[in-house]
Image 1 (spheres, rainbow over the protein chains, first blue to last red):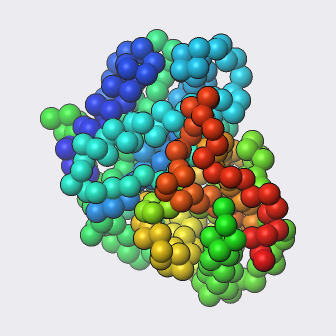
Image 2: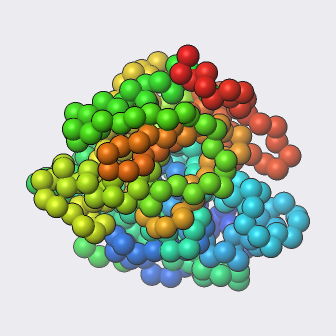
Length: 178
Length: 178
């Protein structure tokens, strides 16, 4: 996964949180995801497909999801309800849409956003697709953006057990920020 | 969501389970999903996009996931490990790919499959997108295929709170089998 593929997603989340939520994100160091690592309690997920295929996951601590929805809808939310789910889906949609526009060479379309909730749910990627987590701190709590993007000629989905990896792992996740 | 959109997914899962796993599925009555209803313990998810956009979720009881992987890889699996995750992702990919081929008028591409694990995880769809669950019994346990597909001119993703629904709900889920 090349640096120029991940930077548009970083720019997109920072921009969407700033403009839509008035919320400043402080980026931590990106890392390659351990496959079985749990996400936060609420995760928006959306698929991308075209000349590259991939997934964007926006994972939020509960309080971030509640505060973000409260800000968007100008009503105080204290429980995860349908409005919160819709809001997190829409934020995921906006972030993926903004990044996609910057990756126009892949002519990608977005699927429907879904929102996954549940303590300790784990979202796993195909073992041959590098997935990068970019952690952020916000005044409301922790946020993680997880992105996997594979150019189509290299994409095989989940591999047969005897298959060879289709995507080369990023040897140094820091290079995405070069 | 029209009947002709859902039938290819039913045909696809029955065919993939029969041909790849030698496993006969017995279909139950499809129903509109209550948004907050938990899925089974392991769910494969894949996005579709083109002239229609949507999501396919293959949700399996733990034992179904283990037995399916054991059959595919000819080794007995007793715990959910990376091979099981990859196998469920690949089954999801095959089912969506087979259905997509029958819905060629939408010129859809598939995103990367992801696999979600965790007891009581909930996968929610945008409130303006009808999602249909099709339950199946198998000799190994329960299986559910969940599909949402929205023609693109009607798709808005998660709605703003003041928005009007983009997709008309299916008044009678049974009509998908007409």
